[in-house]
Structures are given as C-alpha cells and as structure tokens.
Picture: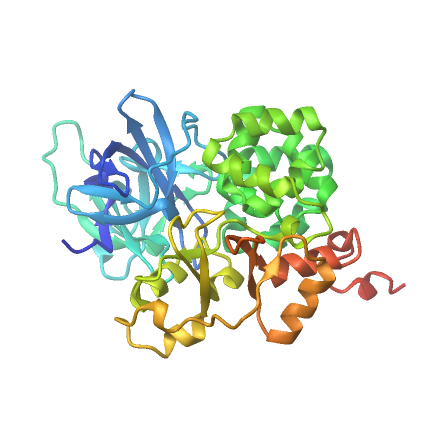
Length: 428
C-alpha cells in the first residue's frame, strides 16, 4: 500500500494511529497547524491523537512515518502523555479553520472575489523536505439557514485571506512572533531569545512546542538553558528534555542543582533518561561526556538502501547522518561487538542491494570514552571526519562524537553570548 503525499485534513479525522509494530495507539481527532504570511509556507505541526483512555495528546508530524488510506503509522510507539493544549501560533483544523469565514482572490475563481466564503476543508501536501504544508482550500459560499448546500470550490491556500497566526480575523504579537520562528534556524531563534528580558523570554518559551523549544535550548548559553528550563512546569521540563539529544540534555542537567536534576530524570521516560544518566557519569573533559548515544547503528545484514533511508531522517543532525556504525546485536548502546563503520559517501557509490557488512572501514581506529577533547580534535583533523565511533575497552559501541559538539566545548566559555563575529561587537 503506497503512502499518501496529498490529503485533505477532514479525511484524517478519525483515522487509526499505529506504532511501528502496527499496534493501535489511538485515533486522529484534529490537525495542528501554524499559519504564516505569504510567501512563507503554512505548515502542519502535528496531529491531536485520542488514546484508548480518551486522553488527547499531541504527536509531531516528524513522528509520522506514513499516512496511508485508513491509518497513520508513527516512527515510534512512544508519545507524550501530556494533555494537548494549543499554544500561541498554533491553530487546529476542527477548532479554528473548519467553518471559518474568509475571502479569496484566487485568479481561477473570479466569481468568489469580494465575497465571504466558508472553509470546508484544507488540503495538506508533503514537500520534498518531508514537511507537510497547506496547499489548497475547499471553500463554499455563505448561505442562509434554509439555503441549499453548494459544492465546494478549490482555491490556493496562498489566495485565502483573513487568517493570521492567532486565528481567523485575529492579531496577536506573540502568535505572530512564534510563527515567524518557523523558517529560522534554532541558533538564530536562540540569539533572539537571548536578547530579550527574562520575562519575555519565559513567555515565549511557554508558547513554543516541546520539540521546537528543545532544539532552541540546545543553542543557548548554558546559564540561559538552566534558567529557561527551571521556569517551566516540572513535568513539561521533563518532556522538553526527552526531546533533546541525550548529550545536550546531560549538559543542561549538570548545570542544575543535583536534587532538581534527579527529579527531572525520574519524570523522564526510562528509555530517554537511561542514556542521559550514562553520559552524566563521564568526566566533563572527556569524549564520553561529548558523545551522543543515538547515532545510526545497524546490524551487518542491513542493505545500503536501508542505511540511506535511516540517514535521510530529518530529525538526525547532519554530522550524525554522515556515518553508519555496524555492530552485532544488540544495536542499542552499549551495543554488541563493534564491526566497523561506513561513510555516507561510500554508500552513495554502492548498489542499493549491497550489504553494509561488505563495505566497512574496519581499519578506522575508534575513540575511547576516556580520551580527552584534544585527542578527539586530533582524530577529526587526522581522518577528515565530522563524526567518529566511541568504544569501551571490550569493543562495544557506546555512541558517537560529532565535530560540532567538540567545537562547542573547545570554544571559549560564553562564546554564544558574543555572537558569530565577536570582533564586530567591539567596534565603537
């Protein structure tokens, strides 16, 4: 059954949501979107899923593996159990768009120009970047209570007017600011938040969704990370930590009082907190403290096609996507016996059906968790890599260290606060 790349929001309502093992998790009850002014694309943020216990939770679209006729499959069966509440800059199809009065200047429908029309449905289309965007709208002309139902007219989303980030006919500075963050890199949003006073920073952080806030927190100076995390409700702070890369979560927790850090770790899902605890056990000036426990780890019988599919994961940092690590099961860190690694460039030169066990680079020496940061810097300079394996003494893969994380720790303390070009800040 082929995956859907274009679908109307109304068709998704009521669909079964399944985990990767195909066990049912719940049903779709609404679609969450963010509206941005043209020409910026308006995006689908996620789906509101009603679990079997009737609790409604938010599932980000990046967690959706495929939309198929009749059901939606997730990449992971783990979902946040926090009850869904829309934040500033977030609208829902059922609650905000369906039935809303708008107007259109679509050149293909001149008969609707100057008239109020009603949104009947919204088309969602998957882009090449794997985002789901709002592409077209089904609208109907307004009618009296006794008027007959008219067939909908399809117009371009870009030609629909009267909807802002705050809703239909609404204006909200915070919502519009959140929507403007959509096309910004997390580091640039972090720089903006850094320039605000604490009250404004906390207010915006409250309105960002967990996944976006996690990405931004990772780019803030350490003292600001701790400040923002402590300003959140304790359960939400744990949810945000779960969305972060384990090494970044460990760094933030080490900036907090021990008792606070322990409470947050206890509130996190054990599958998420376990790797963080292991990383926190290493000395902060070693490779072990820098590594991530979630690189691409595959068994030897994996094909090149399957490995490249994993590397295309949009949630995976570029540096980690550059290398695949091959081990004997188990593939969760710490893994079984480490066999070697394959660089992305090598896989691109091989037939898709080739087994990655046949194209390994077993001669590439690994890093040890006890190695110093200087050793890691020499390693990357010697082998021209941006990512490298970290092993224990028994040849088990513990994780991978990426050059961006290494540079982050080698730069002077507080480098994020001085900006990209600190010399420009010193010009009088």
